[in-house]
Length: 120
Image (cartoon, rainbow, N blue to C red; front, side, top):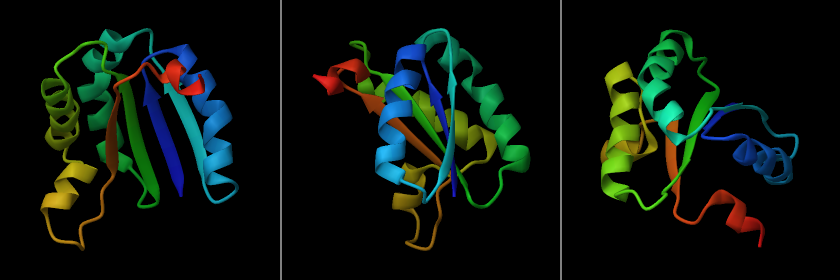
């Protein structure tokens, strides 16, 4: 399995570079794509999802990680979900609502506390 992380900033990349190998070990490969900020990631997300949808290998997953930053979590999650759905990708949330046979391609997550706070 290969996991692509889309994150909103370099500090999230730095955190994941330390955490992910400890969690996954050698069972999966991964790459991290940091953006300039949350707005940069959100504005580019529909285009990025469409690009991945064209040729996403079966053993790849995409994880989108953004900070809540006092946003409305429901609206933010809807925006993340819709970017994947509109591109034709199946999210974890969508697969939960479908049959248990559905396999998701995208996992959207919102860090309610800033990601950096997880270290303290």
